[in-house]
Image (tube, rainbow, N blue to C red):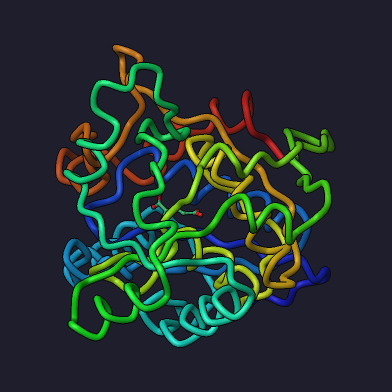
Length: 297
Ligand code: GLU
């Protein structure tokens, strides 16, 4: 392990639900460059709570592809699935403060409830805000349905949570070089977001804030598609008394038609480039003008 000469801790946190593409390589290499520039540590965290979609085969491919690219990380590798208890503890704290409630709705129930209500607000990812169907169920009704084994998600009571946090929340957004600015967090944009899914006993939002705190992460470097989610993460950190890392949301790589590279848009995996005969240096070179232009540390 390389010795670090600061206490800065970075992490690259891919989900093991598909093969890595150039966008991931970019994020990994930017994390690596930034950690190296300040002599910080670099963790690799496999985000694998979605047991339906995450596969061991993809996790193995992550190690192989990152190794091939020349990315090195501290061992042991961190894994979300090892922290279900921590997520449950965090949810229990929020529950004890009356800030979460069980929600039995299906996606269909929500769509039906907002159908025809033109201009119904949507969250930054484009989903309709939760219309509150289960928000005012009596304690007895909640208990009766839970005891009957009805699957329930847990949602944050956003209004109560913001009132409880009771203060202005912001975060430090780092830019290229030594640029930095404070961004006001606006968690209300997410409405009563899900913190524990029916099928998984956590959601990305709760897992990421708990993991970053447990692992002592000081610098979160990730794609700008997660910029708005940071407002919700800051609220959770405040409610759970967790430290706030500094953030850097980097530009996303796009294809020739301007669409962001993603697993769902079937971006070409790094392993396909490898099979086509590209060398790791060629892939890194392909990325480095962007690294230098948009995101150099
Ligand atoms: N696991 C997420 C992804 O692969 C990244 C989450 C994060 O960096 O906070 O897109």
